[in-house]
Image 1 (cartoon, rainbow, N blue to C red):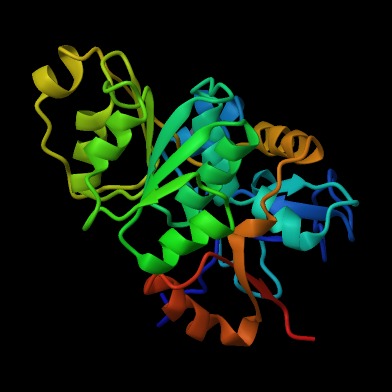
Image 2: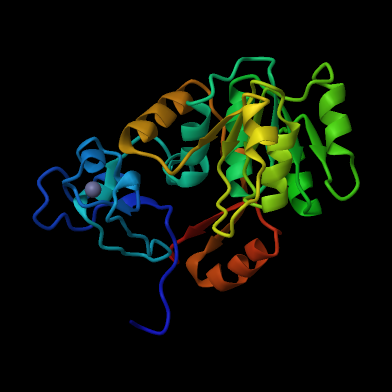
Length: 286
Ligand SMILES: [Zn+2]
């Protein structure tokens, strides 16, 4: 292994050289999905590469050129600008769509989104597209302001200052939201989601947590009949569904806070790590 690895897992571009692949030609516009499954198992045969037991991750997309296997490349339409395609074909919108397509969101429904990082932004943008009333909790002041002004969250709360339960209950007839989408991966926030959701409601986990979470199944799930779900990545059919949402008015342009040349990637990644960006578009140097 080398001393460093090229990061990046969201990309829109065009085919420079299809190699032996017959289904793409030079100049085809594409997006990528980085789940490189075995191609043989039940999930891979159904295009659900993210569930493959011998999954490898592709990526390295913060570059001018990247070599990818055919199954990781998805054809994109010619009439959508790259700045939009990279959002529609990335996991910010992809995970949001995969989560919401499991939830049956209704217009006017109050949904609580925990965390306003990239996935929280995507989830909020899609919820607004479906006409939901979105309440967001987020500790970073920059992210709170960004999701309020750019993605049009209806109410944005600061967990260090606001009483989240009181705010949610006062807007949901004192029973809590029917749907909570947890996008931070913070164990405390995940536990809060299970505690704040109403009986018979659903908690959708999108934020990654490899550390673990101590729950009391009797209190958090059984006696409340809570449904716990997860959403992981996206598939080629998911991307085509997202394109249809876009053509029906889904606006994700507000997710982008910066557009910078590739050479400024180290600076902007540092800003991102400190919670000071929305989505960032990197573009090749001219
Ligand atoms: Zn497989």
